[in-house]
Length: 149
Length: 83
Image (cartoon, rainbow over all chains, first blue to last red; front, side, top):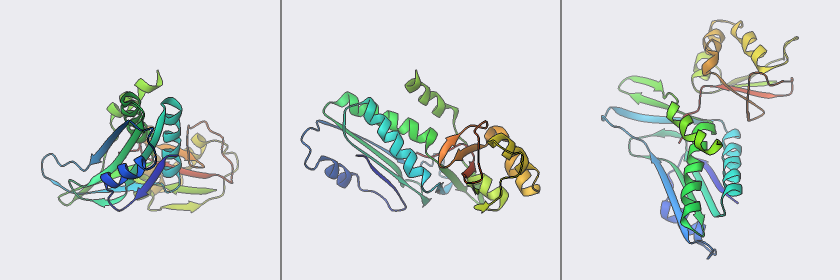
């Protein structure tokens, strides 16, 4: 079973790893990815994340299920924050656990690539007095295509 | 049916969602989008750029040719940008 959470609160990486490992000695490799709010030129005031309650959770669960069919995972956690975030704040956490590292590495990338192209989240940036929706990137579709070959 | 709007589509329509009777003669998503464009200036603005519009029917991603019925939940939104 995957642990899927959509929440306003921050997450604790150490606690999430400990929860995944507890009572499971089959795990020999844990990979984590944390996405954070970037502000390259120090102009960003905030980033607000909107989502589609219900569909978000079911899409994330589907993506996790697909990863489990593809790799021998011992555990999988996806936590995505919503609401108003500040530069440097955590946005998303993906953890994959497996007996060996290759499955954990690959599954973590797979989860992030599909999350970015399928999970219904939208980012809005507040820069100065202006607010604007973030555009989707073509590079995210390119990242996805390698898994579909 | 239940219509839902997210992100820029929500802002342009000025609505988070609404109940709406499936009009006669409309049987798929593409036809519904065309119909929505004619519902007023706010809808025209939200639905004019078909290429940037994404659709979910009953919380699953859908294509314009997907058949719809009056009991469906249909969501309209721009390309997703999470992660």
